[in-house]
Length: 113
Ligand code: AMP
Picture 1: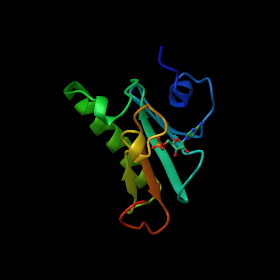
Picture 2: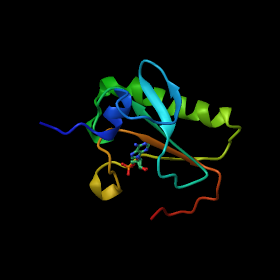
Picture 3: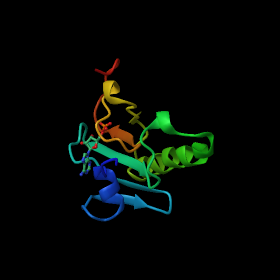
Picture 4: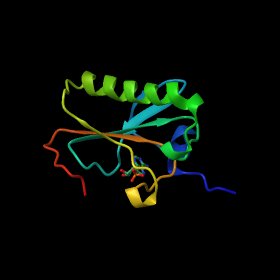
């Protein structure tokens, strides 16, 4: 049996989060360990492990996640931000429920570490 992820517990309301948005398909909330002055996550309610496990039928959902995250950024008057999706352990993924990071409020460097 696969273990319930921390994000599933947030979706189920079992643990609290600083919620920025919720609709039928996703939730957005502040990252608990912010790596920039603004750092939030957008996650689907559907339990998808990572981008690697997405199917073609998830394409609209993926677009929705990006759109919602961008809408939040614009509501914060941002026009510069970085989006990150870590896919797999070696990429830095630590929570195995798909999520998009939105980071802003400081100068970003490239390449990322
Ligand atoms: P990743 O390393 O891409 O899997 O990102 C997982 C992110 O989830 C990290 O940035 C964590 O700080 C964040 N995180 C873990 N637990 C929580 C939580 N309870 N509430 C908000 N963010 C969390």
